[in-house]
Picture 1 (cartoon, rainbow, N blue to C red):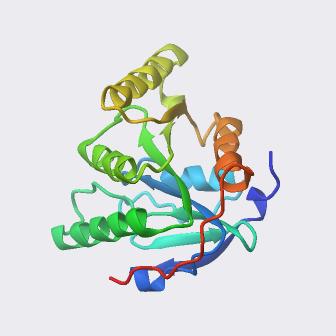
Picture 2 (cartoon, helix red, strand yellow):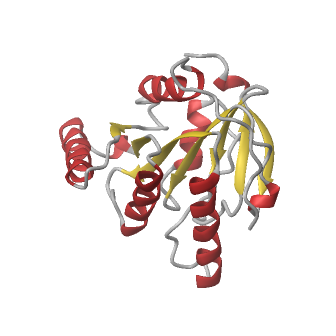
Length: 212
């Protein structure tokens, strides 16, 4: 394991594009439906219990939260989506913010899309896939809560998700993941290492963040 992840620290939160940190270095974003285990996955990958806020109440993450690995590399926890009890106006604002972030953030190197392995590829997940595909942003799917299924059904779901994405000409890698059992951590770290630290991932030129 790259020890840089365990040194992750909260950097800042942003409610709009104007609040984003400067366009320097590289970052990888995590997106997912509310209650998909997204924040728990971030914590597990960074070997910290409370780096990203988790809650039994879905829809808790309402800001874009940035975590610094070092001066030039960040992980980003995007607002959870798809929670029915969140007001429609709030859902629209979140969606607009995430779409703008994914389309315009030049230092973004990839998207980790988090889905509950028991409920993959919701309509909101497909919307996120579409935004990433439109920008040609590298995509990796974490099928969380894999401990809830036996190994056979879990692997079947991995294959089904990969097949569904491939049928839409979406290039993506897919893996099972469990924060509870620490399953799939090494595979996810390998993806992050490549996107954040690989020499064949060129640095983006610094640019101003588009204003809302």
